[in-house]
Image 1 (tube, helix red, strand yellow):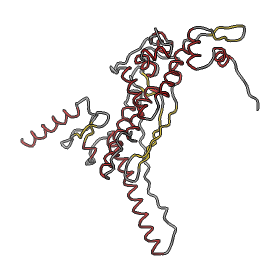
Image 2 (cartoon, helix red, strand yellow; image 1 turned 180 degrees about the horizontal axis):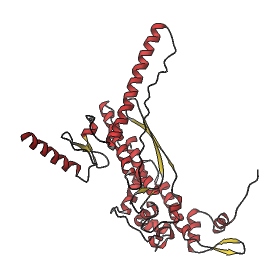
Image 3 (cartoon, one colour; image 1 turned 90 degrees about the horizontal axis):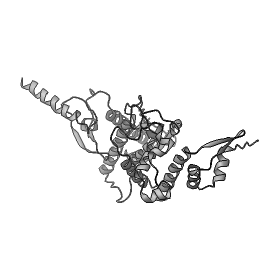
Image 4 (cartoon, one colour; image 1 turned 90 degrees about the vertical axis):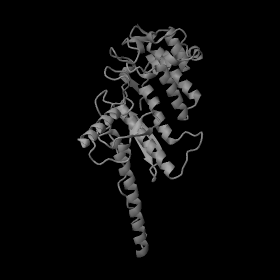
Length: 343
């Protein structure tokens, strides 16, 4: 009976842990516990951090942990084999045979239907790798430079930027990625993050000009229109304009998010992330100028003159031309004429 009571208390305690909305789901088991919060505010189940007993079900932390440990194991075995080969070669008087390599590269494929949690799972994996990298630095006595953004922070800070320009509200998901991405992360022999690159592809370009009822355009338009200061509104010709005034954002009649995320706050987070990525404030302003130019371009109208299309000179087209830094005539010519180069 005492053993049954202990087991019941363990299950109840684990239910409290896994039922917390601030924690990713773990598994029922008496060993489950948590460790301090990560940079993103979540916590990591220690059972995944310090290794499991092999009876745990599939979990995003376990997948990340398995990949990281397999990489480290490959690096260590490769180094050991190289040392052995060099030692044998020295004894035999040979110089060749020092090119032995153990497989170390690892891949994690995050897939699923819309709303399955691919974006969030990718954040967890990146956050976990960043935490392991910092732990490795601490273990080797390598403290980050004060006032300098670490590579771990830069990897994590890429998310708000990518999500602003590539994510949108859909019927099933308020933060759905409308593009694919391939993230390449390089680690040192000590398991520390060295660099990262992100390739994007298959952006859902049609969303820019058409959204289904109940969906939105890309986040960046709503974020900036809500967060723009008075000076920015004057500079970008937005005075008196609201989200409902642009065809690119008013087609579906949907302007908010069901997950209660505030667009203006997300814009501030994006701008802060750009600063951490060493994107200057002038560049940020130029990007926002282009965003607004696209909004005004969506309001431009054309008319027919014979067999030709003519860009109408109105407030939208004049604003788009001014924001793009071109004359109205040049803008009209680029949109209504075609040039064929014969080679």
